[in-house]
Length: 357
Picture 1 (spheres, rainbow, N blue to C red):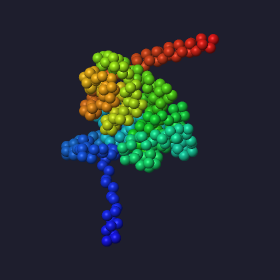
Picture 2: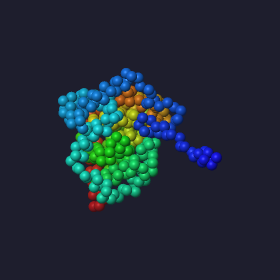
Picture 3: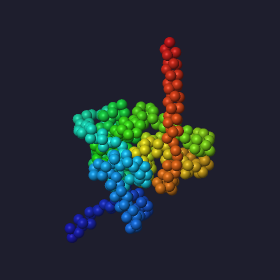
Picture 4: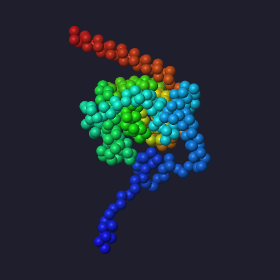
């Protein structure tokens, strides 16, 4: 009898239901759209895709550079279709240039983590629980996920004391750690911010967020050129891009967008650079254009921060994004922004000198 009572008092926790990426499902009764049973044909197609990618990469990435030089258009097309999830971590390191950085800096990451101290340590600890809180890897307080996140962010804040630590960096590192080790994630962050392959992105996190300001200027102009009616409506409702677009650039869509879409964007982002963020932003506005032009301020702001599910389908959104050709115009707008800001800085310096005189 005693044994029976003891058994009855034990409460077995309900199993946590997660999606295929490790995020806890919020609605227990809703079917997971991404976890539909796949047909034999789809499985065969995925296997063929995986074989092609393995052939491109070679053992330990040995064939990658040669393949990219020989068939750059094939590589670009395949990346745009999506990197197989099981190979994503390896490919991200290869296309970002981070693998080379790691090999050239053996032991540096360990030194930064173990022996250095950072002025940002308390800020990092405070923010850690806000990074992907619904993912099983990061849910346990002081668990392996949170410790890894802390280590990488702390190491970077020591490695680059000018940037240090800024909250949005946690989203980038949190995403990377789901696909690679701490050391690999650290060097990929270095590759992005210092510009191993593409233009450096550290200006996203420097004081005053100078690169965010530039990107928002460029995006606003592009939006008004491609969608003048929407641009006029934004002016009337006093909507500026910092109200909805800052997070897009600071976290590269990793903060509040569906994870399967974020991954597809990151595949392209790491290979083609930040222009994909502009293209996806423009595609989102174009997709919802007819609704947005009729909304008043409050509803408009809500819509710009909460896009409908159908707009978040990568197979619909990304082809639309690729249709925007922005490279040349982005360069022109960058020059315009720098000239404008240079004149502004010179004007302020002149006024300061007059004041001192």
